[in-house]
Length: 217
Image 1 (cartoon, rainbow, N blue to C red):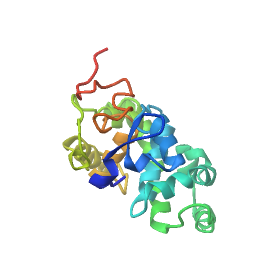
Image 2 (tube, one colour):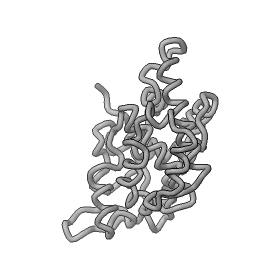
Image 3 (cartoon, helix red, strand yellow):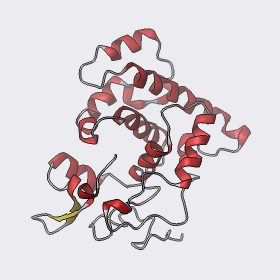
């Protein structure tokens, strides 16, 4: 989710809670921010879904994707990697005809390719020490410290960890996985906490202190 400094300016709502501007007015975005964004996701299907939605979000607003998420889930069989990995020309044609999702041929093919890579990663885990498959690979790149931004300009678009993870994902057959969208996935899944200091959601994942240090235990 590429945001500007203004997007991250804190706004105190009628409920007295501080949120960034991007999550302050639209009810759907506010609900997503208050209950989901930045909370830990550790299962393969959940990680694959978020990675897939980031692929489709490229060049579009996150609000557009969020409004279509249920349609995406229906179209891609709940983002089950085993099912999506088996998609062929008939499924691609079906998806290209589904007006409820983003009908982008390259992104559809990338999602299928990434499902195949996720299955291969899981199957190869015992041989190359990638415990936990796709989810385990993402979480193995959790840093010891997370950003503690006070303004939108202090929210990084990528980090050293996201660059390393993106490179490893590409080496394992994933596509549409640059450091920027990989970092967006890491933030969405709680691997890092980029809530603005002062937001009521700062530290909500339970993994980080409000100062950015990793919690122990």
